[in-house]
Image: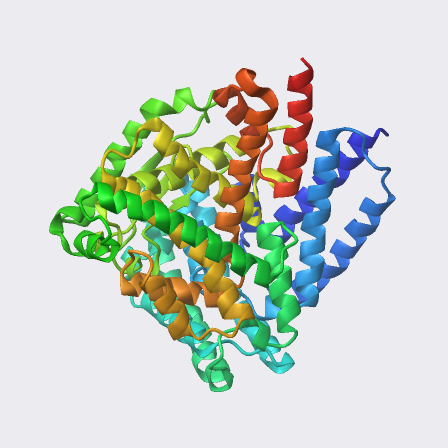
Length: 558
């Protein structure tokens, strides 16, 4: 068997294993299965998986080193996936799972939002899957109890917010829940819909309530007032491992902190120039106050905000063929985040289409207009929609030459996915999308926010910052509402190192382009370069750099 077939065979076996062990991953990829279980999170599932991961690593070590650049990339990505699973199990990540803002309840909502019911069989299968959600919530509770017995302690603020989120979901009328959404959206009144209401009311909601009770009654009494990941058991190693996972670079928290400070200073100087263009020379604070208080910068309603995003998205679509040659087959739409969820969610986020193309992607924008000023819309649309997340991930799903485990696992490659989306915000300058100083400010303020994430995340987890100091750092430097800033800081506390991926990825994608322009000179073609870059798929930053260097060497020699 050739090297390529050996690596591909192992990658295919790993993908089949992933789809079995993490059914939601396969569901998002469009893999057809009658398995009613969407979440396998019991303690015994985690222990079994750990042993199987070790076997995969042994098999990977027995392969001969691949010779081609794509084969080397595939092997490197497979090793990274396996080592992540191994290391995080050893660090007990499943016993201190993420609870905020993407907690267990959000994952089930995400699954429901991706589900469409095309026939009676699909409706019956979805009903069967609803019946397994109560067991999933109970399994998460078991893992949390095991973590408590091991000595893990959550920050008090994380438990309070997570419990509040869970209870808010349980207070929604059954017909309005995301879990009932597939039936509510269907044009056919499936008989299974009535049974679904009973399952949600009598099984799912009580189980989520039990999980919220675990947080309140069993974890909160032992919660810690400190917010640093380093303050938990094996905390410094735990944080550094997440840093490595999310950034893909060998940088210490101190180095990341210093980089964030330098980046913030660079962006703030650019903001001073924009403020001067807007008539506020030397008065950036006054300019920020004007943007925060003037009614003209806020939509009159959630519907008006959504429509404004839709108009901006079409303006962007007109420009796309000048920048990207290969476009995805699936498109996307814009929806408002329900008002019940909006206070705890960011101004906007992307929900990619599933791999089978059964539903379009969705750019979700806040249902609270005050959370999303109009001057932020161009950069948000570029980041979350096209050519950002929704185009990027849709294209990746069509790349047959990329292993399935990498094609359908974009969130695991945060520096790549978020770096590209932030790079796309910068493309808006070349597109002429930012028409006013305020919209230029919106882009810069968004980048400043990402630069300060390097400062705040490392400040919280490695430098002993308090929550109040982290909130103050953002509140005095970016134009976000206080409730948004507090939610962001709590997110950084709950998801150590995740916020580092954005600006690290952004800086690398800018450097990739500079490298290509310098190497190819007058022969550099932006559209061709973007097609090559996007054709790599989701990968770590070092893998992207290696594959681009190989392509540039070929182009330069042509």
